[in-house]
Image 1 (cartoon, helix red, strand yellow):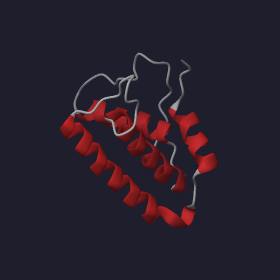
Image 2: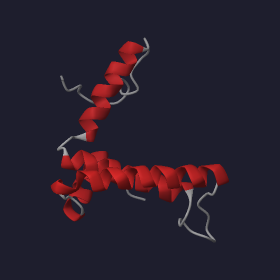
Image 3: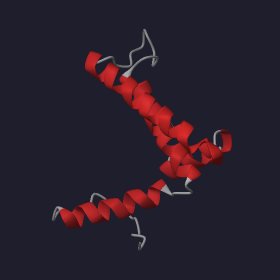
Image 4: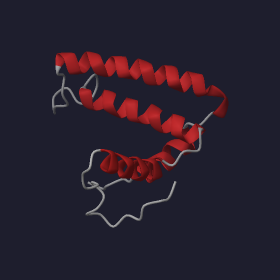
Amino acid sequence: MNEITLRALQEAVAKIDHTNDAIDKYFYKLTEEVGELAKVIRKDVRLNDVLGIKNTIEEELYDVLYYVICLANMYEIDLTQCAILKEKLNSEKYGRKSMFDEVNIDYISG
């Protein structure tokens, strides 16, 4: 199975779904998907070989991620950069080692 980076996923979504005048539409879809995720988590419905991904925690997690990416794209936000900057902030705030310290990532100044 091939790995995909967050940046590559953002670029792929931007090619098929990116409408700057529909920010409210994407935000409403995100909140709808969070609600659907809550339902399948409560029922603990998981991906399996028989039923596939439909109506599962896995499907709804991806849907939430998809609309987060859409919103980031509309605001021209690089989620990879955000993850790095936010993790740096969190590690300083909580006095712990950054989860990216073991990875060859240059911190981007913000």
